[in-house]
Each structure stands twice: as C-alpha cells, then as structure tokens.
Image (cartoon, helix red, strand yellow):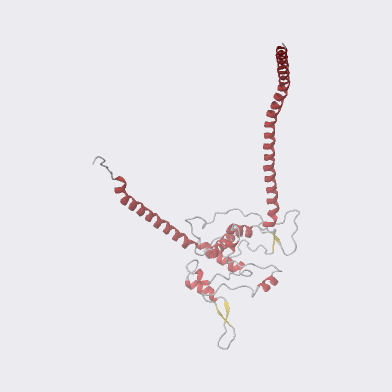
Length: 314
C-alpha cells in the first residue's frame, strides 16, 4: 500500500513539473520570438548604416583628393593640355620643316640665355640643313680652343664637331645675369619634363595677368603652368618676332610650336630611325613566325595523322 501511495505521489509530481515547464515555455517563447524579430529588423538597419558609412567615406576621399589637387595646382603648376603633335603617332615622323624653323627661333630668341651643350652642329646635317648650311652656321660662332704650341688658348671658327655655344661661361655668371635664376640647358628639356612637348608649348603661350588675390614680386611673371606660378623668364615669343624663310606666318603660337618640335627632336634625335627599325623588325618576326608554323605543321602532320593498329590476337 505504501508502494502504491509513493507511485501515485510520483505521478502527481511529474504532472506538476510538466505543467510548470510548459507554462515557462509558453512565457519565454514570445520573448524569444520578439528577440529574433528585433534581431532580424536590426540586421538590415546595420547593413544600411554600413553602406552609408562606406558611401560617405568614398565622398570624403573624392572631396579630399579634389582639395589636394587644387592645392598642388599652385605648387606643381597647372597640368598642360594635350596637343596633336605630328610626331607622336607610332607611324608618324618629325616635321623637319618645323625643326628648321624651331632652330631659327632658338637661335633668335632662346640662345641668348639657354644653352644646348649636348647638341652638335653635325646633328643638324640631313635633318634640317645640308652639310654646307650647317658648316656655314657653325662658322658664324667662335670657339675657344687650345692650347697651341706656345701653351696659350686661342679662338677659332666653329666646326661641325663643336657643340652649340653657351651664352655664359659658368652657372654663377648665368645666375648673376638673370637675377639669381639659372636658365636650364635645353638639350634634353623635352624628355626631362613631365608631359614634355605639351608642357613646353603651354608654358611658352601661357603668360597672363595674375588673378585677383595673387601677388607676384618684382622681376617675376605669372604663368600658371610653371610650378609655383611665378617664373623669372618673361614672355619672349611675340607675333612677327622672327622671319621664316619658307614664308610661314611667324605668330607667337607658331613659333612656340616650331621651337617645341625642335626641342622634342633634340631629346629624341633617333626617333624616326628607331620607328623604322621597329617596323622592319615586326615584319621580319611575322615572316619568321609564318615559316615556323608551316615547318611545325609539315613535320608533325604525318605523326599526328598516322593510324596505329594493334594486333592483340597474334
């Protein structure tokens, strides 16, 4: 009897425990459901906030880059636009008439301050002058040579193997004559400046009055394409400044175009020959590739097309 009483008591306690657990589960399920619902609602919101933050970072980067570009525009100079040069194409060559006119502009305008110590008179032969014309131009200059038999230096007429004469004896003399500014050598100026020919042309034609808020000290001139905006070289090219032999109108922009072409040639004097050599090399390589493909097909065709039969019976 005691045993039956204990069993009935155990069943009653089990039923109470089950009822209590079911009640707790019923009470906790809405809370869990609410938590899952809030988490699912918060997940799109967090993604949207993440995307908004990323978009804001991109906008801030673009705005910061524009501010840096605007600040560097004055320090590094305005970026020169692109101009359609006759010699920039793969199959294009220099305009040799323009090189001749550009050398005339250099002699008449630029040679008073800028040297070209890496260009010889012989380099002009066959490019823009005949040998006799180049000799005559070289003879117009005086070159210090020596020593002679007595150990003294002497002057003589220039020859084809001489370089273009320098306007100053040394850098100190050049700076003294130009208020502390040193006129650079122009032999390799086109290759040594970023965006070479475009920069030179834009610099020569870019002189203008300084805008409001910018003060230029005495002895300098405003040019937005020059780093810093203030350059010691005044505007040198004016309409009719030189007279061309071929009758081309000598406007300021035409002179700038011709002297820029001349300086581009002095930086890359063998560009035309290199391009012709490259075209010949490409043609020869194409022919050799054709012969190699034919030879490979001729030798491998019998091997690839043969049929091998195996007699497994015998």
